[in-house]
Length: 293
Image (cartoon, rainbow, N blue to C red; front, side):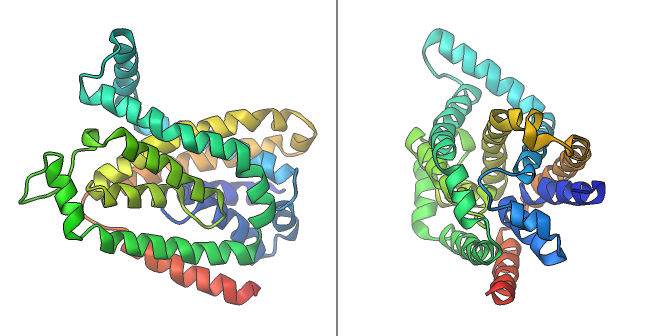
């Protein structure tokens, strides 16, 4: 792997991890498109230098999210330990902390159990293109569904203004957070976006785009960080030989790009929707299916 390849893959990871377009899908497709045959072939191997390289990119992305949401995480962590000490949940920060815990558990368990096997089987350009189209359908249907009367009714039932039926993030129920965590398992398939699927479920439960995005990014942080730290020993073994410098360069690129991306998206979702990303996934996915079929 060259330093140019590491830099470009880092930039791609930092952006596509947070845009609802699937970082894993793009990590599979991009090397195949530009003719980086060695990187493309390494994707589906049970063990490879490229998988070790991705560890560094994931850790850097999680660190960027921690930095951007540092004030939120400070409140969430304090709220978690306060509620743990008194054995009760009394404030929005405390409730949000436990919502994140509940949503993280199923995604974490399933990720450890299935991530490696699913990557080996489905980390191929044709499959990634097909799942990218599925991701586009999920985003489009989610946008349509959130406008339905029953979604507005759910929001009003949880205290939203009938004139503007949008729920506050801290009114999510624990079973809803658990369902969001389970839905994230779909992101183990290359082409399905973690941030996209969690946002769609949040919208379906009456959140607005900004709060759905905030919960998605907060939830992604410990999952991405844990996945990276769990596999970081790979970088210090044989798989890391000859690429540690590239990992450092790629990780810096990924971290900077992730910070800029989350900053952009939190402003974007104040007024805009998932529809442009749905159209992109459908068109790009279809083009990839046609190319690699």
